[in-house]
Image (tube, rainbow, N blue to C red):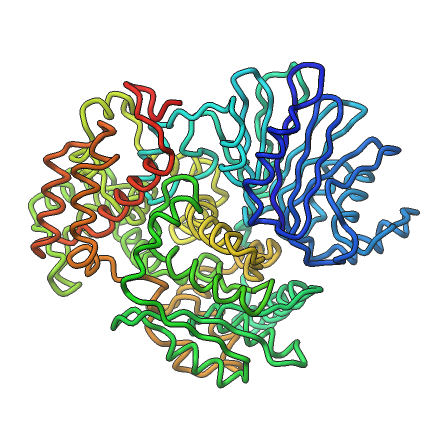
Length: 639
């Protein structure tokens, strides 16, 4: 795994070497083993390497003057060996065993068409010296990040992390109000936005190309999940295919020249990965787990059960429920507001894993592929009800009932009808957006100051979901929800969380459940094989029944979370009060002080649970303090 940085000038000359080195070396954690730069006419490429494959070779930038190409690359190609064989049959001669050289030769042979042949996680930049053109690409799912933007003088700059671009003195650092609205709705900034107006994320499955003098480029999509249900599959057929695809993905991701292990939470997905690894490995798999010393948030007993069942070499660490001191550290790790509280245990499990291995396999992606989240079940049920009445009738009827019905978070789940009534008044896309919004539109409107509302000019984060839904290849409510998660939640939250937390410890994390071939195949499954009654991930669990205990597969899902509500009524209460009423959030002018005070008081008293919103605001406060910049009048954070 590696860190990239690059500058492509808009005018003749060579980029400033010190600037390029600053952009590269601020990402040293992504690649502590080696570093290199390439400076040429019009371009500067910087690279930091975490050596995983062919440790003695594969140094970057990889430059072939004869071919007129220079490559910097972050990630792993899991099919590089078969690609190498294919290229050798075409007469290509290799000088190393690295996947970096395979990627360079694949580009040399096939150009952008090579993307359709790549299986892996990657972000890379190819400089074409002869045509003075840069080509950037990101993997199909968005496992590896790539940020880009233009300086005030018109140069294209790019890097693996935001901090790489922010090391360039000419990058615009004004906040994007729309990105801030997205964050406050969702808890992360979804692709292709970043928190800064002048910096973008290259979306998953996209590439872009640019030559000095051209307008700012538009990212081009080369892959999308199909959701193409060609023929219905029987459960037995699906199980057989699933096991073959899954085991193949796991085995291909176990290739490493450095120590390798896995995360193990005791949940279905991580247990499945470890079970597959155990079948393929002659040695016990090294597994790592993190637990909390707080009732209801500790899964280590289940992880231990699976570790014993699979005979792994298991490592475990318990984290104090007071581990919220990481808050400021995480603000520096993520570079933009990010409020998924499971980033705390993720950071700690990566810290633990790095003491044992350099590469770890993760179970991320199982819920998105096979409909494991409870929200999928609720969305499908509500969509069935919506289909029975036209929107013109549902909207006024259920909208009124939703307003009149009291909010009852404290009540048994069957009595919490307010949210369901409100959902029935919406269409499927709006309803699902409100399901995943961790701060409601009504709450956001209460929080926002008149100034911030004016800057938004009517924009809401719902537009992100509307835009993706227009391009969705399916209208089935369950499949549409999965598609929206693959475009927003998965790359914006889950994969961002794991990439930054792991790279902070120079740990490479691989995600076999997100092999894009497996993702696409899973999308074609009939919905009834994913969600069967109250059982999510039905076919995946069936495929694992010969490998894992029944109570591991079918126990209630816990999730990887922290006791936010208790923290914010206890040891974090005063800190939250100081930050939100007297810190950067209070000073930025985007929020109503009286509403901030009301949320704090209601939460502290137990009258309401505002923990998710308060944590978002705390992480925003940490981000604003971390930027060490004042807030401008109507342009966000200015420098």
